Image: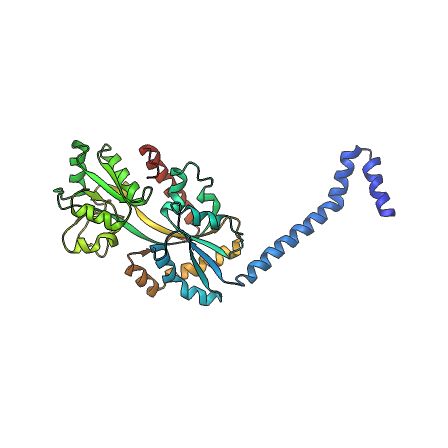
Length: 349
């Protein structure tokens, strides 16, 4: 009771008035309490992170079963499971152009038990195309690790006479509307690269959307469209058979499977370098020790020659971008696609 009276006296009778009295109590005793609480919170967070993982980790793939994203993750995950002592449970949640699965992870507890594997479109494009998306993937997620990528190629139909990307570009610039380009899925890198190439040649091409790769390939073979920008995997059989021609690889280095085909950098179009890349991410505010542990394990896996070999078998190249450089990479990709989308007035199909 005496201690309470002392405190009341400080509050009501101090020469500085009520405000200073309260401030006096806070600085003298309250600050110690706040500091103690904050310390306990930090310690509890560290303890939880050290105990992680105590149960299986859910990995949401916002695409249908059997997707490239799922193949990439399963290629890498088995060795990491052994080190973590817990299983990864892959959960396919397709729908609404990958938004359903993405939102599911975004709204999950940031405790390291819900992860998302998404593509270029998920992390760098959708926020610029979907006005009512309601969130920015760049801030809604914590990057764990960039995983793999597949460089795009410029492939043309049998009716195209141009022998190089430069020759084709010159033709398009003076023959606007003569050629069509196709892509699977509005807002994909294969679509937006076509938009960008058309912009570079005076908006000279007409975009034709397709629901799937088989339809796109058939359209190329029958000259319904004259050019597309897929990954090599999508058209490898037709290219090997000589039915379709590749004018350029949209990367800084040539592909091992197409050593005779120049890159867009060599062809004089360095700005056209593009790929479809994949990243593992956690909800924002996931404890840093957990993110760092996951990032380290996936970087080790990506350096494994056997993992790199298995990724190559599905047309993917490991991404050698460190966690420290990942945020800058994501910002650059987002800015690049934002410019293409805004200049072209691109919306979802």
